[in-house]
Length: 531
Image (cartoon, rainbow, N blue to C red):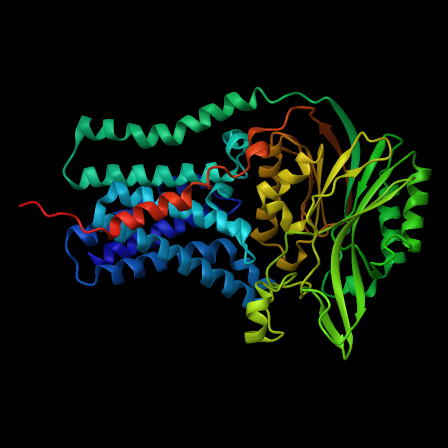
């Protein structure tokens, strides 16, 4: 029977991983947890010795397959980053299952499953908030490439999708247990109605919601630049002048009198600029002249800044030492240039170990300057509290400047919409991962933000995939990976009230820690034995 359990865990891990692979389908995720739960149920029911050890082994197999197959591409940036993300997630997810197994044995499988769902959603919410945030495998992300089936995310966000998958898996497990008990025929078919209803009803509702999305109020033509610069070598041989030349040359190849926005990727202007004089640089004057030339054009791009300090003591929580008595802070920013103004936004959701030193006050005394290296710019980057919204020259575009990793965080992006944004502009550099699932997954997550906020998206990615995405999450124009092109598309502005999700955020997760804690405490109370 142990061999059968290994087969269950292997197939289930493969099924879950397929939900994150672009050429596959996420429908397997609805049933993926059921074999794992059934394995734990049989270990308990048949009184296996060392059942917790066996259950842990099966869970480790399941979660290691899922994490490895879905995020192996991190090794293209760094092996260390992959093993930290893979190892933590695998162990944490296994612990969630083992705690749920413990509660199930103590209080029954209905209580155990309720505890599991609450604890899992709490874990996903933690991954959206803490300094080691890695929400890439949050379950609700699996349906990102099937926007027609998840239009209801405008009410729930991706955590609603996570709840959908968890509840479906639990109900499939319930039917499997009934089958194991000998239920057959019509009785079994009736019991199948619950999981089928939970799986299908949200899809039907989604089709209805999609048909009611407000129509476009007005459209604007825009250009998303995909310069295809090698970030490991070619980028560091460029300077701001060369980058500005490339922006202008690429835009000139396709620009029309009706074009109102040009977007270039994250940190595309490579020279480090002094943050104490943020706009006093010749490259901005060149871009401003180009904007004036083309009838009030708006240009958004990425840049890098630093701020120097002369002090023996560390002057800020994020400062780096550059020498005796010298420190500096780093800034990863989005810059907007119009004929009449400049604006800056500092990236504020940071990649752990690349742009932030997680829990620095605790870890630095232990590790010194050793940090997790996920690839890219290593160190702590200065963030800002408010989500900045850029206004175009005529105020028709109110742009949310979302930088790279920030696009993975739904409630975070809501902050731009609450501040008045009517278009989301994602600038990113996904070249670190090569031509793998990494950049395709990152693109697909942008589609989730469009649905949640009912806001169009223009995405400029250094090596791709650059794209235009409408308020339903459909990609209306895109450019394939590892190519250079100025992609022309339409921004279809939808003037509609804030969505339920924008107003209330991740409300689904907020009570979940308390629910999980309540049932865990209840499970510790000894049951009174019947005489």
